[in-house]
Length: 423
Image 1 (cartoon, rainbow, N blue to C red):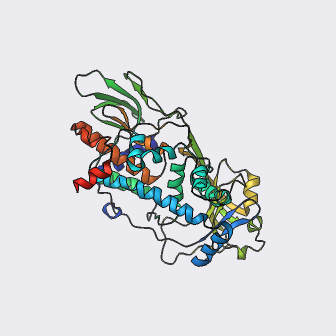
Image 2 (cartoon, rainbow, N blue to C red):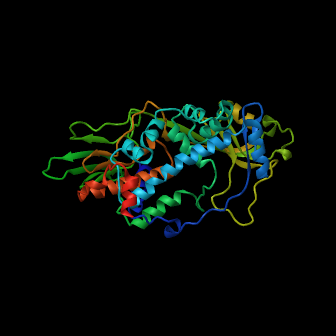
Image 3 (tube, rainbow, N blue to C red):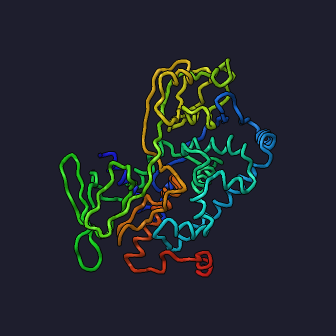
């Protein structure tokens, strides 16, 4: 329960920092972690369908030779989506907010963005001329590694995932968890280390008042709040869902489920023969993505420490190293023996990482009731750290605008024109 409380507190800190717009890494004492290069490849269960080299032009030639200009069409499609998505930062800089996910998406890309949540990645890419082979070999591998899903997932979430696979991402020295703890410290929030159990709408005149009940090792407690932000998933199969009392009509929860993610950290010797390299010294890859086969793992990569010194180097392929294996189910001993010649230790973590993105899942709303908001609503359209930060600032602006009755800043249409005239 303490872990859940700390996570909620950290997300609340993210909300507050997003509201001020002052959450630069240097502001909270964070530094960019030095990257260590490593080649990638895509494995189909029998052989590598695509291999990265150390030469950029050769990589482009291989993509063109195998898939024609599909990679260019994919890049153009992703860039078009991201260019429109980036409008949200300009809107938020001018104080605009949205009460629902559909309203937010429509403001960015009109009906095209909303429709992207209802049609598949494969369908959208085929429409712009990307070949089925490229989708099966490359696109599906990226989506399996990031979401554990196939190209049948909705196009909007798929575009966010594919944008993240194009590089230019960075991590924090010491571990990305320092982002949450740093933001929490920056906000100087009063943190109650407890698990929220119930939110009750109090019978009052005028603005609503909410009674929040919680429990921890010391017992139970409760406090009254004018504004409540829920920063945890609310869906049917969530056993820790908060109970809402006194609401008429009742608070709706999302009719969906979350995707379980299982990561195994294995310290051992990779079985390079399984990947077609009998001599481990010749194995050149640090990151391996997979197509729909093999089914027992989605991705495999040689990971580096969260703190990387100037003298750090990756282990040679014939040496014991720490490998991260992402899989849909816990790895059996026989499967570990398939991937590794031998190993010293295995540590496994399993959690509900993100929603199962489906074209049939309705888009939820940020506003659950007057001054009661749900930050996690946007992750049903796409799930990432950046999307969560966007949702946090949207909720902060939404709460601010509603409290001060600045309703002209909520759910406005044709914002591109409005923002230009404000400039």
